[in-house]
Length: 290
Image (cartoon, rainbow, N blue to C red; front, side, top):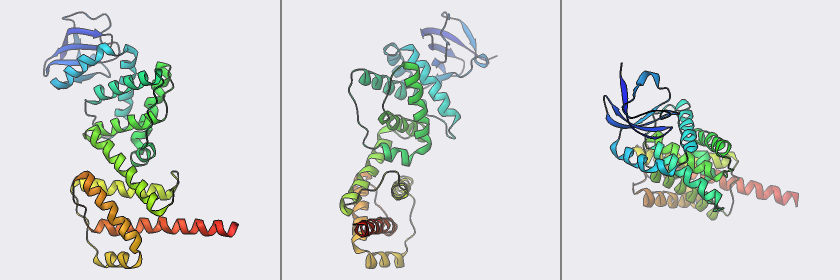
């Protein structure tokens, strides 16, 4: 029967152990270290809901983090990670144990010191990553309940990005930059149209979803089929929106450093024209009311 041998107990929920396959590992599990002594053997099959950090660098980072973190928080983060695993189709990058624990601990400290951090891309994150956002809502709710704090909704967006990062194996910086870029592109559209898109509207959802898919296609290196007739039609019929779409693609190119296929301009123009028409329709309705 395969088992691990306790090398050191860091606290009730974290131990360092010798693993038959991975050598030294950090093992995280509710109560895993309770009443354990060095050289104790633990059957792998008897340990439920246990996480093993195999990567040497991740191990060292987690060892440094554990003494700074309240035990209750480590336990709650473990519950959250189990919840994420149960509600996602992709495997989680083990770095989430460090990243999420560290982020939430720091967020709680900020909250206790009354240092609010505004999340300007909360709506974009919710729209782009609805499933991860729902998991993050659960996470913040559980943290508030267990740690007796009242974290703001801004934190849901930050936690959601950590979940996206762990599920997609992309660095949190890249994930955050995509959300920020989409937010900036929406602002550019609103400034050019002099029209604020209601954040709970279908128009906003369509715009953000389309921008997200453009960025995803760029990231994956997918080509977009050129439709010359559509391009000519958009340029001729909607020159202002076509120019704005071109500006948006140039901003994308500068920020992600990947060339955008010209066909994307035409498809963006369609969305922008719909928004411009919506603005006109609303203005006409206001005139009639007046």
